[in-house]
Length: 307
Image (tube, rainbow, N blue to C red; front, side, top):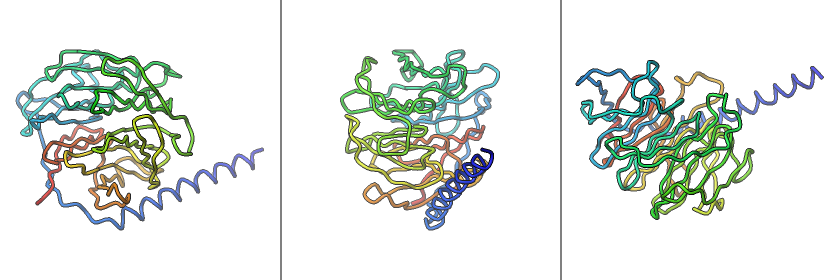
């Protein structure tokens, strides 16, 4: 029995290393994207962010951060691109703040990865709607809930319920559940940690299947359309205004501060067009194409493409 356990462990390690070697080869072959890193310090008034989990941008370019303050501060913080604090809210509402996105109407949506609650706010922080995703298999586990949200042109919402469950759930604009798909596994339409979701300009849903190291995409009914396997861990997805597509990848078995890369991907081929070596738990993008990496630390910075 002990020999069988050792063999099984060695097989898992071999698969993990093989996966990561595949990702490393793809990253090594990709050129570095030219960007300008712009550090932001919130000084008016001073504020230190903690455990930045996700970042989004409104049409004006203001930056919405969701972080994990240890001493009971506001998890949602809004600043301009100079770092001036505009407003904040959400104290006491979250167990594990995880995702933040802004819909086409400018409303702010956030996700709690422990309680699996989804909240909709005005840009000023007035709560408009809450959705209890529910069916959390282990409420005592820290990360066991939803992760991210995407928006369809008809107002429907698609929530990735990705930590303990392995599914995507569709809701109407009022928060009524309409459909769901996905299960744990490695086959088409199966997931191992659904960490991020985005809607392409063509109306398809792209899902970061994190621990399977791949990108999968579906139509809005949940029909599987395709996948690209990169290896390692595939963390996050985001689309720019002009359809440019970015993701974040990381090998397995190494510290999260090492070998993390934002990558730009050609959606017609799956080829990695370029890379930026920076940690990005989730990823946002401004209307002008500036990237907003959420580092899970306290550093807030922008990555502006160089002309």
